Amino acid sequence: AQTVTQSQPEMSVQEAETVTLSCTYDTSESDYYLFWYKQPPSRQMILVIRQEAYKQQNATENRFSVNFQKAAKSFSLKISDSQLGDAAMYFCAYRGTGNQFYFGTGTSLTVIP
Amino acid sequence: EAEVAQSPRYKITEKSQAVAFWCDPISGHATLYWYRQILGQGPELLVQFQDESVVDDSQLPKDRFSAERLKGVDSTLKIQPAELGDSAMYLCASSLSHSGANVLTFGAGSRLTVL
Image (cartoon, rainbow over all chains, first blue to last red; front, side):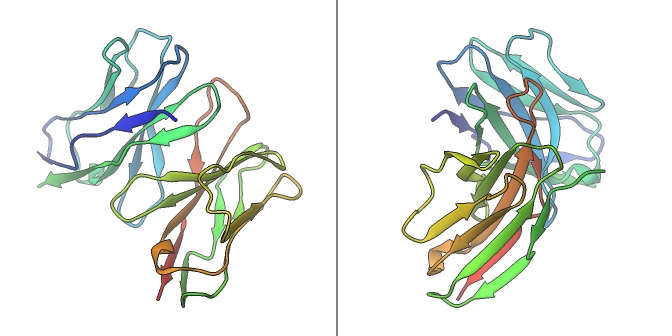
C-alpha cells in the first residue's frame, strides 16, 4: 500500500494571510493522482484540488494552489487570503493505478480572525 | 447536485449488538468505497467495490464485518457483534470507474458509538 504523510497535525493562520500545508507520499508508480480534501467540523469531506502526476504545471483553484515536486514526492497546499470558512481538517490523498485512494492523517487548520 | 446518501447519520449501540449502515452512491458511479475514520485520523479503506464485485477487502475485519453490493448500486456494511473499538465515523464514497479524472465523492457519514 502507498503511504501518505502529513507531518503537521495542527496549523493556524491569520485571516487574509497565506498558509501552506505539507504532504509527502511514497510510491513506486509513475502514473498517479494527488488530492487535497477538506473536512469542515461535522460536515462531509469535499474535494479541494487535484493534481495529475504527469502534469508539470501546478494545479490552482481560486485561492488554493499546490506545489507538486514529483522527484521529492512532495505535494503541499497553499491557501491564500485565508477565510474563516477555510477552518477544517485537510487531508492529502493519493490515487494510483488500482483506483484506490490512500489518505494522510490530516492537518487541522484554525483561522484566527 | 448529485450526492452520496448514507444512513443512519448517528447510531448508538451496546457492544455485542449488530449494526448496519446503508449507502447509495451517485448514479452511474461504478466504484463504491467504505472507509472508517477514527476521530482525529484519516479515513482508512475497509472495502472497495467495482459494480457488485469486491475489489479490495484486505483491511476489513471479516470475523465481524461484512459488506455487500448485491445489484451493483447501493451497499450495506454490517458489524456483528459490535465492539467498543468500532466507535468511529463510517464514510461511504463513490467514483466513476477507472477514469483518469476519478475523484471521490463522499457521503455525510454514519457516526457509530458503541457503549
